[in-house]
Length: 318
Image (tube, rainbow, N blue to C red; front, side, top):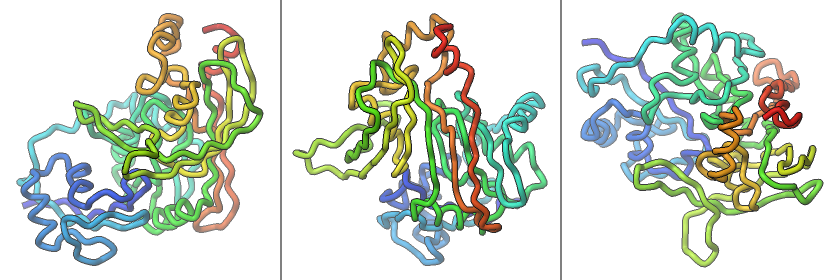
């Protein structure tokens, strides 16, 4: 009977503090719940090479070993094949590549991985584009609606090294964002505790914690720089100090400056007007990444071109 290979998942900030059973149920979507608990209790699941109980809470940087899973245990699902056009489009997004890493300028509207009704994300597309590749894994994630720089590791040793860089806050990340309203400061540091919630449909949403409630929170910190003010909008640069889920989006919405085109935290009426005028995206762009290369130790600084929609909005063409 054919089996999949052993796989390893390294815990990022968006899974930090999650119980191991919930984490496995999230990533093993095609495996029955009963089987997930079976392999967990039997010790086939290892965290940092050790057996763990079902209530083990994951820490940033933990490595989760997932054993080969028989195809007979999977729920029936069909993963579509990428079209030649899809493969060509994702290939053209690459702006840097060597033996260790791929860096691409991800378009807005493409998820970084499949799940929640999405069959083909960036990583699935790359695995179909490079079927001979022995290892391809996302180093980090950006939202589906966000465009910009995304890192993919081509070796496990590189993935581990890049996660160490992220944990020690040596990965420089800068974003470009267009917000509703006229921004009020040249530079502003925002430091807030966030709480992750889910709506009735199970979709993740994040909000600022209420200090009066006894809630499980995560600290989040961003620095905002004013680049330009327009009549009703402002163009900002954002430097991330932490990398929490939806961090920039929640910070700006909380301050009363929602991101243009943000369907989850933004202004509904404004977004509707933008769509009518042809702006069918969220105006958040991962524009800059800087880090010391995990192998060569060379300082890498990469910049993604400003999307045309930003320029069109600035010039008044949207």
